[in-house]
Image (tube, rainbow, N blue to C red; front, top):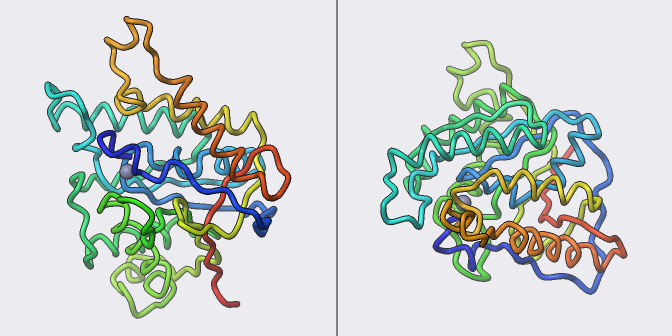
Amino acid sequence: MNPRGSRSSGFFQPGASEPFTVIDDIPERAMVVCAHPDDAEIGTGATVAKWIEGGCEVVYVVCTDGSGGSNDDDMTSDRIVPVRKEEQSEAARILGVKEVIMLAHQDGGLEDDRIFRGEIVRAIRTHRPHTVFCHDPHRFNGFQHRDHRMVGTVTGDAIYPYARDHLHYPEQLEEGLEPHKVHRLLYWGADHPDVVVQVTSAQVETQIEALSKHTSQVGGLTSADLSDGLDDRPRFGERLRERSRSAAEANGFEHGETFRQLVARA
Ligand SMILES: [Zn+2]
């Protein structure tokens, strides 16, 4: 999330009148690829909480260093980067994420190029996820951060065909990695989601707790806000609760997270 653009960041997703297809399996391994520290928690924090509880190993790939993410005019990129790295580690620890890979590209500087694609291919071939989550690059309903579009596009390409096919990035195979086929890609922030994961109220609360670790980002929360008693986290949490209720409504669940799904052919 970019704090200046948080109102257009896809935080809210529309509910649906028709029930979504339900995803009720929990794979052994999953990966979340996101642009900035905190995107993963917003996009799929409750599902990750559920899947880790169910025994799934989850790895994060955070593509930028979050160096552009501050509303504080006195904050510098050099100072915010280690803060956001630590916040991301804390958030991942709350959820039980196995590993956080920080690619540390410059915030706002992601490009659809061979180097970045190769980094995602390498992560996929190393950790071999069944399911990958990432930003939907084809969202037209409102502004979307350029980094989010880049991550969505490059991750989709990395899954198919680059990670799967041995003639792409052959130098990785010479190092001992093997090609890997990802079975399912789940995009968050889609204009038209088509699947839902039912989650519990407790899993949404775990998501909110993880997100609250991004103190430099959450609702522009600053130490001055805290000392003034203006802690924004309850409002932020309420927005996530509303979103999960809205996503679950058409299926008659209490809470859910919705995605747009791509499934690889057998
Ligand atoms: Zn972001």
